[in-house]
Image (cartoon, rainbow over all chains, first blue to last red; front, top):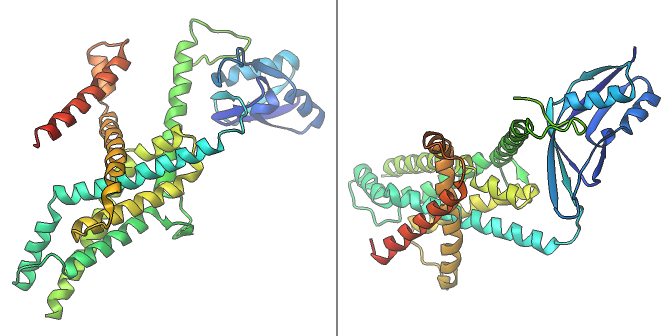
Length: 218
Length: 138
């Protein structure tokens, strides 16, 4: 009996509404002919694609295995990827480069002014200026004029701390690790994907359609 | 004399580095910027966003600590107000989200529908509060 291995990522984007197994899965088999045959098996079709820019379904691997067995009954299938995964259909659009740029500018401005606001709000909240005056007096016995080595080194320390924390500035990177925002971004995406999969699995009970293999978990 | 200056320098440097770590991991950890990057589908530019955060934090601190005057800075005020406001608005809600405020309230009060009106209510309430705060010069 032939064995095939299938692997799905958690979130797959397609631009063709007619989804075939080869579009969403990584498939490995020792028999190249079998492989081609499996890749061509239709999985599902996105309906009403002209009305919506995006639509999404959650698929259970069980449904996928059912599809393959429907075509080739005598086959052992090993799933080495996700158990439930999301297919997002997205219309291809190349327009909106300016819009994209505007969005980037928007987020950059929010990040910049937001961070400036937070830093100042923090310094104001803990009253850094007064506290530095007190520390200065404690150490030297003289009153601070508000522009001493303490303020200068604090600013340098802040810069060093930020650059160490973010691990890079511009293109020059300090180490090979991903930056904190990259990590946070992945976490956020994971949360979204988990939520989507669980939502679809939860809602699929009443409108289960075995032909598109919607999730059966939960 | 130089001993005192050295002490001050050590205190200043360490204070700055630790504050930077704390405040900025808070900014990142609340996920406001990653949320924005995801929603605008510009995730490939997060390095740029990080640079913006770093620069904003550095300049904000420098101008605040030294009480510097920004030359010709009046045009900056509406920008600062608008984008700072957007950031703080998102920040406040992200904080509520992190603390699981919504799931708990929705479960306790057995709310299923109308969640969007609750969100709208919170947004209006926050805006009204901010307006009152500034109008009364508190």
